[in-house]
Picture 1 (tube, rainbow, N blue to C red):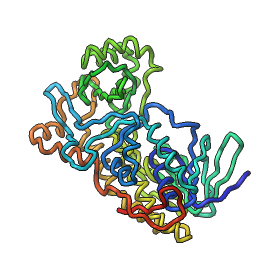
Picture 2 (picture 1 turned 45 degrees about the vertical axis):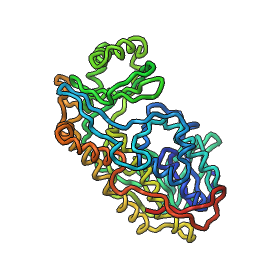
Picture 3 (picture 1 turned 30 degrees about the vertical axis):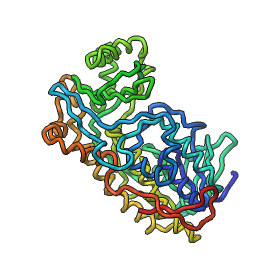
Length: 416
């Protein structure tokens, strides 16, 4: 088996993995990022870029180039129920240079981060490379075994960062077991064409479902939210029921479904999982993003938290690696302590505080949930719901430039 050595191996080329790899390479540290696919063109991935992530890109000096990529801006999240309309979150009230959520296809985001990472000689992305298991010596992780089109290889490193998603093979290989919370929903994703200047309320409620519409420019990305485990029931009732539900929200969208959603092949199921590792690390291994804490898609906050994890990881482990030593378990514990509170707070809100925003029974109409009723009664609260979704607790920042071995704009550390 071919063996290579590097300082850091990042498993997973999603938002957490790409950002962590880029920021560590920016500090002059040798990093290999492993991405199991040949490109980033997987559909229906999370595409929300929150104000706190936009601020990170601003602090890196790349915001104008980033916002030149195709995207749409959402400044308010509206909730339409049989009881009326509510501006549930108003991002224009939270201040800052970017008081909105940018909806941008994730492949554009990841391609952008790849281009920026390639400016630094220590950044290496290997595509079509699937990490299958950890290389372990007693209780210490030494690297990963990787399957590639050219055959198996072994990567040895000072630290393995597992950012390989909610079904992480690395955390399973390490024997790290998540604590699982009951999610209130599953999601069916599909597309419908968008007419010029067509507008839609972000979230509608109906009988046994919630419909979310996301503006993608020339099409709507539709999320049909159903009770947890309710897919078999929905499918048994047929596409006619799905079309009728969408038509009840908007007749125009309903008529387009007849032509554009021809079979269940046009509908993708996301089985929602909410979990969290009690311990994010073992000697030589750190889990971040969905590998450490799978989130509900509510608010699209999973990507935001993953990016924040990556920034904190680079800030806290970068100086250790620059000093020429491998991170010790105490260093990894510091990352978990830094990031665990915001994760716990968001999961508490998703599973409990926002639970009645989502359907529980196909026979009942989802009325205006408690959280929406409170925001409608006390309108100033929509500033704080926007802040919680768009910024959150313990948001991270890019720190001052430091001496190092990068190229281009130089290397820099990251700070809080």
